[in-house]
Image: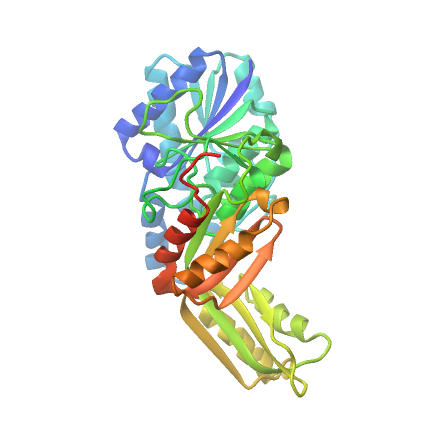
Length: 412
């Protein structure tokens, strides 16, 4: 039988009533003739509770035991979902990551999936099981220890299973009914997209959109897994939600598909750095080793052999970045006069595959911000995105103004 993967996030399985509602959706797909692999998250709020218990017990915790504790939330949901399906006379069985097995690296709390051998689950399908309920977010290391994939890891689990089992589609059920042109909480004109290209979704996810985890979109793009984002709380049709797919399948041909934002950005500037070959490596090597997620980078024109280097990173990583730069300065790796951190900025981005073939996006974006009196601090571009750093107090105004300027409320 064809295989369908269905993933239910924490809000979709937050209590027994919601688990029953999700189980009914699974039953509809079983009745259509699918063998279904259901990936479940922990009940809403449960992972945070488990993490809190770990931190209270052992602030400098053993990462292996951290994974053993925080992965348990998914086990509970998987068992309850399987029991609910059995009560509906649907042959179902729960699976923990090690039973499949979901083979991962040994990087506890941020493991990466290396392989999902399908033999064990396929054997049970052959014996009459119709639904495999798999605990998301977890796997097993080469040493046989439980691992977890990091926050949002159940999305990655779902896409990886869809690739491993050559599923017809991977449906991600969440608390929103699809991917929007921007955050509906900021702009009332935000419009749900029927389809969006993998590359656009990847950019939007990495730039602040919370609908899908970035790694899940990367996997889907690599293995050509059709992703559909749906609401757990609304009646469904075959056209419901947003389909994330190849660029060729997207009918809309507009330069910009969405406006993304990230509120928690910081702009850091090393003032008066020696301008010499290798200086960039000397700066960003220590930042990488410290785990700093550097995004935008700008180097000013050199004067008298000195230059300024500006980069952005998440606000929560500023202290670590400052420490890494101070240590590099002390060791003589780099020399600079001062490090200035501006933690009151936000990143706003315009994303669209149409930028490849249509000009004028940058001009429209910059004029729109200028007309609103918004100063741009940093600009970064790629083939399908333009990002700017601006004062955080103007973030919502910028999002609304750009959404209007590119007329994203209108279908193409």
